[in-house]
Length: 260
Image (cartoon, rainbow, N blue to C red; front, side):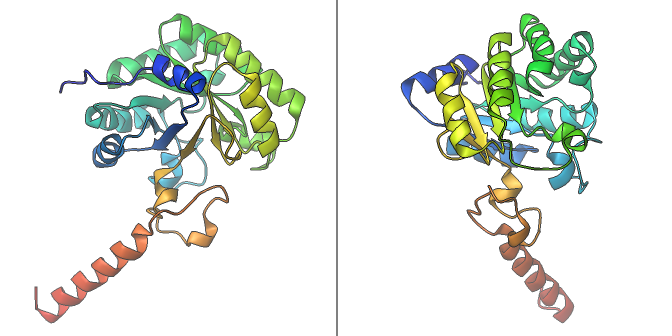
């Protein structure tokens, strides 16, 4: 498949200077990625959130490297334009630079993704630097880091300005081309966005980041949950569950009555 119009991480970096907002959404399979790419999504993230929304698990911690490669390969095959980024699952990037480089290299080699996303701030800077030095683009992830949710004591808003600034500057200097800010108090996320050279991608961090990321299943209630239980930062654009449920019930009815 020709991919001559593919965006680059350099373009994403330049969008901040140009004042152009960056759209990011997750995808875990070929048809979803195809729709997002054709709609004009700037970045498609193969998130380890697949553990919850695809596998039905409570956290992302049990998602394996093989899971990520399996889903990322499908996503990348569908994309002709967007930057494709793959979440590095726990605990590869927690094990040090050498283990991280080996795992990240495998992801990029086996999926042809543009780059990877690595959770953690200053404590992960040396790992990010090693991966970048190996020629692999890195999107960092600061604020609430789900892979450390047990250490953090749960999912909560991040308000420690000194820690947030230290982490964000550390990943920037390590060579990350962008940073996700998750559940950062909105005014602090805005301050970080002004402080950093690299783009900030918010999730639950207010509208003043350089871009936004949402989980596809949250956007369209594709995980078949009560919409009232969706994350507070999510915005429901269409209740696919309601439409699909109605269709399935109609199909079952027609089969049972013999009209189909």
